[in-house]
Image (cartoon, rainbow, N blue to C red):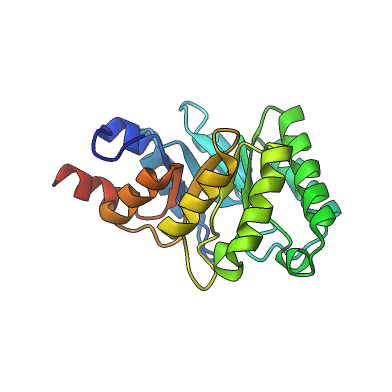
Amino acid sequence: MNSSTITREQLASMFDHTLLKAFAKEEDFEQLCRDAAENKFAMVAINSAPVKLCKELLKDSQVHVGAAISFPLGQTTIEVKEFETKKAIQEGTDEIDYVINIGELKNGNLDYIKREMQVITKLCKENNVMSKVIFETCYLTKEEIKQLCLIAKEVKPDFIKTSTGFGTAGATVEDVKLMKETVGDSVQVKAAGGIRDWKTCAAMIDAGATRIGTSSSFKILEEFDAR
């Protein structure tokens, strides 16, 4: 995809329209889902608790419901992540975005990271659910990002993802390029965190991202229309 030739409809279909605030109320999710359905966004990105609600709200649309697992720190065991994933799938989620155990990566325990990715990816594939692996790149070295990409290239989740949006920084063009160059066409890349305008969004698309996680979907579309 190229930002200079993308259509408005194609851009909208790349958005994971996001509401991950701890204080979000039912009426906020109703608005989120209404907006996503009207604009034909790819997905609503939410925590796992409101999955059932959003699935019901979106039952007459093509918009997916995406559950964030072990969010935003990733500091739960593989077994806990597996249970949360299973529960979200039971309640109707179409996509899973889980946060890796960053501490174990920092410990150099790549076998743990690979096993974690295998467990979640396998569970998603068995249930025809899309899997996305959140790296939280702001805490990682370039070498650690590359190590994660090589594991993903072997395990083959559907996506690798830059950030939660809750870390010290979000997606960067440099990291998206590194991720895309390392995995090639075997895994897609999702850019998320700090993408609040069309200029930033366009740069992420040109760097290789095929999904954009943002709570600024409308602002980006308005700026796209005003080019």
